[in-house]
Amino acid sequence: MTDTITRLGPYEVLPPYAAEQLVDRLGIVLTTCEPDLVTGTMPVAGNRQPIGLIHGGANAVLAETLGSVAAMMHAGEGGMAVGLDLSCTHHHGPRSGLVTGVCRPLHRGSTSATYEIVISDQRGRRTCTARLTCAITKARGRRRGSRAAS
Image (cartoon, rainbow, N blue to C red; front, side, top):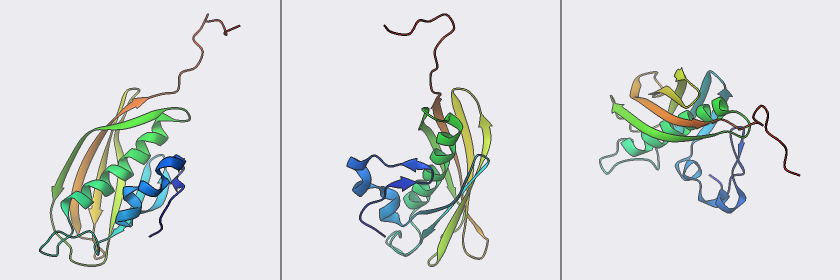
């Protein structure tokens, strides 16, 4: 892990917040950033609950990170995406290794987008299934008939 990150996938992290990124603290690494697929990994070590299993909140951070990057890509240049609803079902609690999250779109509309994020352990066992819905704001262009400011 580093002290600061300057990019989260295709997006710049605003300089005042580069040293405060939760993905850095949890060791999340994005491995694929495509419109229909965002993937990433996270170590179990350092992200455990007191009995040694991966912490459910860490799963939630991985899921929301992957889904938010996907939603930002859907929002496009100058657009914005913010999480509205996150639901996580924890199936199995790994005690070591890496977990991998795979995010795919379920719905992509003009004002909202919903993603399913499947998190699996290194043996391919599903450990968590999450669903994230984000509010989408697209970049605003000039409206037909509007005048440029003089």
